Length: 321
Image (cartoon, rainbow, N blue to C red; front, side, top):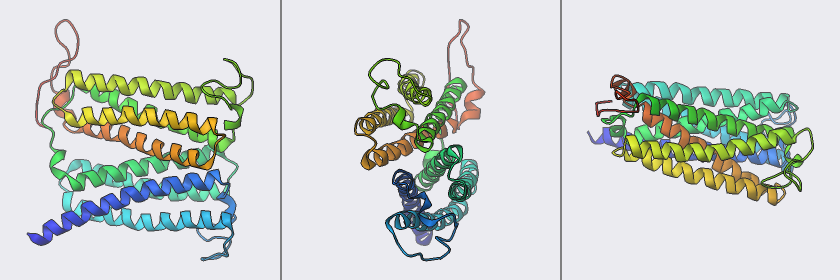
């Protein structure tokens, strides 16, 4: 009994370490990009300049340390996956999350290699960042499952439409993040030196301006959607404190990310602003993934309830998830 409790406690703390480690990997990856250190190890992967331990210049140290921490994080994630399956293999959601977490780990490594070998492809680099976010979010969710397995039982499922809108919001955030990563990797940020508008007027000229305006428009929309979800949860599931708290934190993360984006532009993309923006992006996407995860618990029970009243509208009844 005591050994089982100790193993559960160890797995929970391992999950915390793996989640924090993924956030560190995300920030270090942003540092590699923003300091132009991606070529610090040449086009060799997984070796660095053809050696396991290279001679260090500044760019080489930044890139090599990123790879080293990523390798350590890989061991943490594999260990977390094994222990989570050992302890919670009877939980269907864990059987879904663990493969996603492992996929994120492998895909991130492969795209990292592709980014080294084909550094001129901004689509590949942006996708690498996006997959890193999926790895961060899935690792965090697995960690939450191991820390609080009792929370996987939900007795007040949300209406199916609310669950669908929550998932749509998570997908929306992913596209928002991808557009920002594409701007950074394509070198398009310099086309929009002002905030909230580019240049000195409402409309600025330039081939890269459009994608900057699109990203800022999507960012404003993300705030509106987060507020909308918060109101939906309060209206249709006031007894789900997890959703209301998650939505409130997501609204705050969206505001913080927007402020960090403005700070980044107005301070000419200095390194601190870039790293802060990347970290808040990771937290925002993880928050959106958390909401999608929580509304999915008990979803089938919710789908079995009546979704509309005679005159229209949403209605749900408490049931077991």
